[in-house]
Image (cartoon, rainbow, N blue to C red; front, side, top):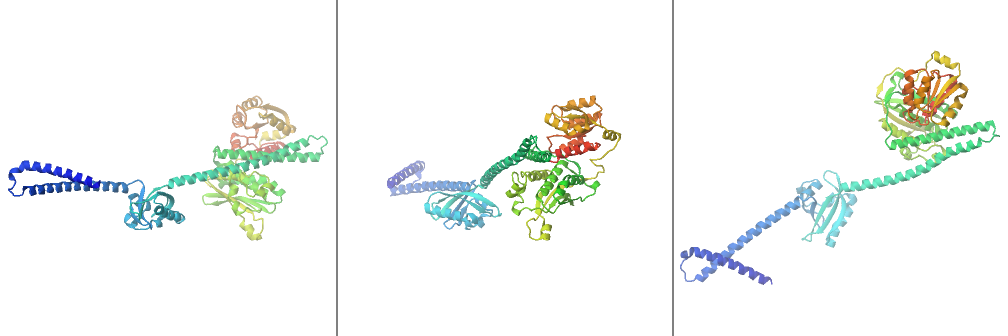
Length: 577
């Protein structure tokens, strides 16, 4: 068959040569030399023409081959993928431009070098097995491995390999999948985080169920016991104290849950003002002093700046909340010894501290205690009240204000007492100083004729509250000091009542009321009456309420002693949580 094709091709070539010769003879016949053997000359001429035609074909074929090789080289060299030709031992015999770029070295340095040197130690076994399988199976093989390139960066590649026409070599193509691997890792981390978050939230809900039910049972249970008409006065007072403590605990839990919810939904706002840190520290000292003394703890504070130099620009309420929470925890967990808190100046920051002689915190739990829905020791959580939300809220507040918070063991206490279980802790947090100088205090006592008159007579009291239960409670609290009560349910009515009754001595103003809230009503009242005493009282106390009350004009200390004490208690209960 092949011979037949060759003969056909030869015949066609001879026919073409004969035609070409005839044309040539017709044009130049008269020039043919005389000879005795014209047949031989004819054959030679035909053969010459055949050779010329074959030479032309070879030339064209060579040009096509060179063109094809050039295209192949260009496609190979500038292909978007990485191409390598490797020997059985893994040496690089050929490579394209992208392979050179991937490995980060010039081609002259890479040819004849072993590709395995660029594979990371962690994935080299996988690569070696991949290379071995290519030559064993004679089929396409795939693999993923990590490369350490010339610039010491890590790249993750997906490789395809197959034996080439030369069975001693294989063709390997690679694509960089580092972005895909990063995306996969991020998805894995996100899934793990979501699973952990779900687990923690489930634990949180279980814990909240316990934390809310416990004080609620105390309130409802002892309220039922108070119905007993034969109850002794001493027992009655004890039950009332339990109900009060349970209510305070429940309110604190609810406030923390709502604060945490606001933080997670990015609804917390930062309201910066000139804040005197000395006043904050001294206020918290006075607030917790009695509780510390009841536990026979040595309770002290330290202010590093003079009063006039202790002003910084920060969110006063968030600073107050963080300090209150940490000091409160210190008192809760410290059974004997001392607690000291305050601040020092550290460059452009104030470094606050709360140092106690309590049980300390194990190193593995020092970061965990700041996480949402987490508590340190589960045994501690059962021995002490608390939902474990305070420190996560404090951390969020400190970071909002441009600082950081951390905890260490009290090394001074350890060195003093040696190896002991109560190592003590020191909580630190920083705030930018942003110092400013002021000479007036936010809280100041005044004495005038109005004070003296109020001290010596019964009061006309306006209660502005839209809740009937709160209204009844306030009436019972202030009943012995009142000659007359007036009642309104919103801020607009409060303003009108105050205008129509200029002899009102005291206003108990709820902050959150319909139509017009307590802030707005107080500002309007202050436009025409700057003497009437106004006390803020609310069940809606969150960050900023204490500061906003001051700015609105609630704070006046010219109260009769009997009212002043109750007013201070209301104010502290409202804003201490």
